[in-house]
Length: 237
Image 1 (cartoon, helix red, strand yellow):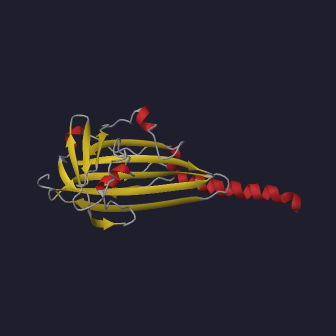
Image 2 (tube, one colour):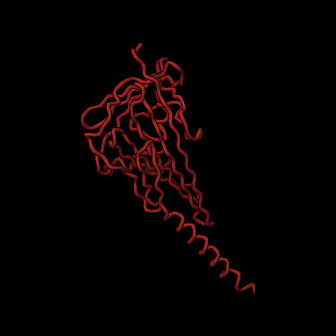
Image 3 (cartoon, rainbow, N blue to C red):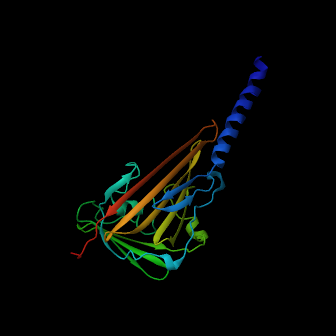
């Protein structure tokens, strides 16, 4: 009996790993602010991309309060401060540069959007001297460049992929963050849908977080959906 135990343990682990892989192979379909989103299987490493047409891009140009008002959804998917959301999880290029002085979320803080042919420019100001600027390139129907796919991330070995486009009068942003830590690996995926609403900016985001054990077989999935509205600012200070 003793000599058979290692083989039995291996069989149990193999069976559990097979179940985990089967779970990872599943893909789900959801609706985010009226847009159909089909999540690719976690294990494929594929960045979620939605249909995109430049003619369907909304006019989001304007200045908005950085502090938002939650309209619905899961409070754990926080969009309470738009600048912080653009820093993470969207990892917008340039937004994460450390502002001096440090960013202070307050009713005075604003985020401004302006568009050229290829991208959206973003400027965040907290009203107390802190500024941070970023740029969101549009990739209509295409993949982000290899350089962007291997963008610097929170930890060495992590990979961030990002893509954005327009559909149904909305701007969508998809971000995939692959991470590895000790004996586990995982993926955090977000898709954000932006559009105008009552002259303000309405942002809806769905999060999918998957992780799997490398030695001991386990698999977890967490998801959430939330929507916030950011009021317009009529005049800059």
